[in-house]
Length: 245
Image (cartoon, rainbow, N blue to C red; front, top):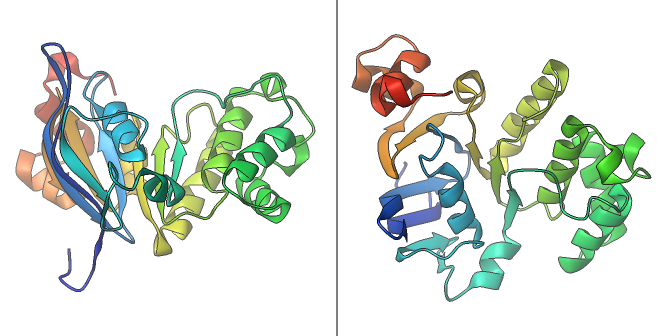
């Protein structure tokens, strides 16, 4: 990271324990505007746990998280106001229309209807605004969730499996959109799709058993593991018998 650039996210010695299980084990990372970071790891590696802690939805056992220079424990409202979060699964309130859902989420953030229309256009879901969320395909539901995450045009985006359920054309659209948006944002993507990490992200963090095994560019990852492909590097770092990417 350039010395002139300020970190938008700083994670220090972050731990999350469930009894004897260390979902996050002394994690340290910094991110800045322009970063598109892929979080890779097998199931249970701690990807979603880390995302939920940064988003403020899960309290760490120990360690600190700073968002735009402020500790999220002391400035939780500030942190959440500057983060757009796409969690796993379908959006909440599946029995209401897309428009009503987005308007409700916008109201919670103090935004007007213009923000809803802008987000809907960006996520390419204007044609389903009147439909109930539960009637939509998995791909459309994911895009509704994505629209919710960008309502306030936040400087930080946390996207958990953003292209899950999307067809190839939809995946291409969302991936190019992420690249475009990263010019003035910090974006962290949790994904099982190695090709997504390789084609979209400029930085890759590999997690395994709650620990960071690698953090750098794709070239850094290949050099560290002495491999020629992201798949081989992933297997080497996360143990072949455990990989499910």
